[in-house]
Structure formats: structure tokens, C-alpha cells
Amino acid sequence: MSTVLTARAGAAWRAAHEPVAGVPRWARTAALAIPFLVLPSSLWRIVGVTLHVPIVNGADEAGADGNLPSWLPGEVYVVLLSLLSEGLAFTAVGLVCTWGEVFPRWVPFLRGRRVPTLGAVIPAALGAAILTPLWGTLAVFVPWEKTVQGRPVEGSDPMDLGTWEGVLAYGAYLPLVLWGPLLAAVTVAYWRRRRAAG
Image 1 (cartoon, rainbow, N blue to C red):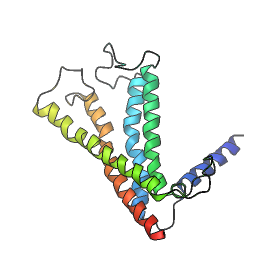
Image 2 (image 1 turned 180 degrees about the vertical axis):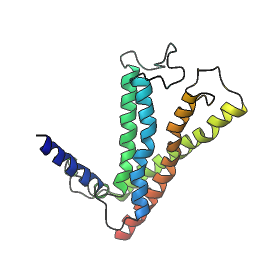
Image 3 (image 1 turned 90 degrees about the vertical axis):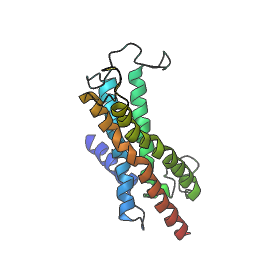
């Protein structure tokens, strides 16, 4: 049974990562790197918030669930957010692999049809346009706010750079700065390749 599952998982992995002819090596490397850039922040959230490992400043404060609805525990929200983040990051791989050009067989009603070029380019370009300034501000303003303007009350801010927990949090989120620019570059490569292929 485990051999069958391993074989199926391996086949699914190869199918999801099967490159398209003509993809530049740099584009494939960039697309495959994007999910790994998102992984540190996802792991930090899950370890600190869901598993309650003491790596988050202010985690013991009351109201840690913020504005979440009462039926959604913070731990569940963090896992769902992390899975969603990784899923969105993985869509970049589609810009260099076959499932980004032809819908896979498991997609109802669309299986085997060509993915419209703009159907992939527009969401990817919008994602890059949103992610670049979103995470770029993290890299610039968090250190500026914490060092130039002074730190907040000790232990109240997850990214208080005066603590090892804050440095760890900042380090876990810092790779996200590259998500938008890499997605933009891979999207341009996808657009050019699909246009040239006609």
C-alpha cells in the first residue's frame, strides 16, 4: 500500500513540475523558488501560533485571536492562511510547467484545453503588482519604525527587532520581499513564450 502511495505521489510531483519546452532556466529556477520563499513565514506562524512554541513576542497577551470570528480558532486560521499562502505561491510553478498551458485532467469541464494566455498572465501580473509593494514595505518600514522611531513596549510586537523573537519573525517574513519581483519576471517570460508559440 505504501509503495503504491509513494509511486502515485512521485507521479503527481513529476506531473506538477514537468517543464515546458523553451522555458529559460532562470525562469524555472525562479518559479520553483517562490514556494520556498513563502515557506519560512508559514512555518513561523504554524510553529509559533498553532503549536505554541515560544517564538512569538506578545503571544501570551489576551485577545491574541484579534478580530477573528468566535467560531474560528486562531490556530486553525493560521494553518489555513499558511496553506493558502503556499497554494498561491505554488501557482507560479504553473507559469513554467505544462499545467500552466494545458488544464490538467482533474479540472472539470476544462481538462485538456489550452489555458488562455491572459487567463494566466492577468492574475499573475496583478499578484506581482500587489505583492511587490506589500512585502517591500515590510523590508523598509519595519526596521525604520523599530530603530529610527524607537521600539514599542517590550514584548508587545511580534517584529520587535530588539528581541531574538522579533529578529526571527522579521527573518521569516523577509524572503517574501522577493515573491512579487520573481513572479513578475516569470510572468513576463511566460507571456513572451506563449506569444512566440502563437
